[in-house]
Image (cartoon, rainbow, N blue to C red):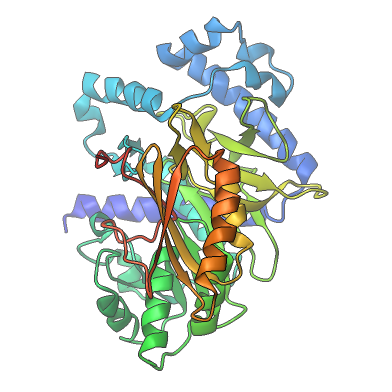
Length: 436
């Protein structure tokens, strides 16, 4: 490792530490203080965008928005929402115009599960802030600097060597790629007792099923963190049965922002990072809704390639009655939707509600083979009356889809994993280019 790389990593660690201290002091949130902070930050951000980027200047001018005259956060709702495709074009043009400038920037990317891979560029300070947001969720749940983490990252995020901090015993981790076979995941976990188990819901479920099936004796971690996918009741029950109750918490985020919300062990709902991001919810009619909708995110700290009213599109329900708005649950991620024969996009959350009522269902996946054909893959209790179960489920689905789709049911002992090593609840052969 070169001296410049060491010094660069050292500066990044220092920035992370500084930002983490600020973020930890900001919680628990005071809603009046958060609202004041949001208005100050977003007004400065929008003024900077108007001066620095033709892309945003044109968007603001098209609706007559003047950031310097902004008095209330709600005034920004006239700004056009930002799609992933628009953001990809915006960043791509800037990078292509001066590629050498971004050579040493931190780069990441989305998986392209919606058919649109997206490369993310962040400078050092922004990268530090994103990592500090991630660490805040861990520390608020009892994580300590010298804890050992077992994690299952994507293969491209596996570092070649430990950082300086890890060589001195801080933020230690054991990593196995989430593309590994489940037996390799479990073998990695068994290397030595760990304090934190951190993985996507799919990998936690796969490990728990394997450990339970073969009666493997494990040392339970002190903390279990689930990320990346919607947590359903049956998955939570299995994970807690194998890895222990009272230690599982969820974090919610996206590659573009890193952590957006986090759960505190023992509490219902997730705390949205109101001090770092603004959350808006848009219902199916395109209106702003405080209770539920597809989410629009504005990041208050990213200035290099700003995200203003970015359509993350995950479907979120908010808790009612809290002074500081909390997420009740994330019902569907941005790729959890169907395409109907008339071209309409149908969100997943009503289907999720149907499946949640079926207590005999242990695991499920909807595979859309064509616009009028969906396979329902199921793992259920062994003792169910399949004929009665199918009739009841078919009636509910036909009612929801207005009989526009043919459903076929397929029962499994264990659901096969996706090629990307996940257990997605919705797989679309149409969007992935594999429909007949």
